[in-house]
Image 1 (tube, rainbow, N blue to C red):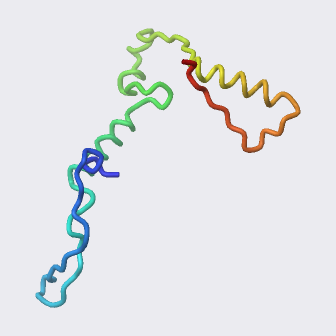
Image 2: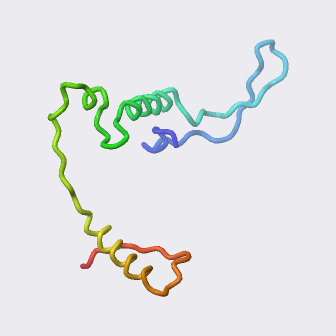
Amino acid sequence: MPRYVLLGRVPRTGYIAEPTENGGRYTWVPAEPLWLREDAEAVFTFLRERALECPGCGNPRDETMEREAEGAYNSRALVCHACAVRDRKQKQFTSGPHDPAGLYFTAERIE
């Protein structure tokens, strides 16, 4: 979906007749393009930035993969408690005689 549509722009719908360069027949073109130049530029900028990210951690590769960056980062383990309870329930259920076909597990916050 184009960026400007996400921001609320509603392109005009329908088609308008536009004469060809030689003045002959008319061609039908969209009343307004769905993708503006700014939309395309935003997508390409996003894709360029994503291409520069480390696929493992998401940090910029040009910084994190330099020799000087060794020792400049720390790591810590985080637990998503919603995923943990879901995974435990799934393991408990599928280790028994139950048929797991089509079975999904969710995590819901206790109010």
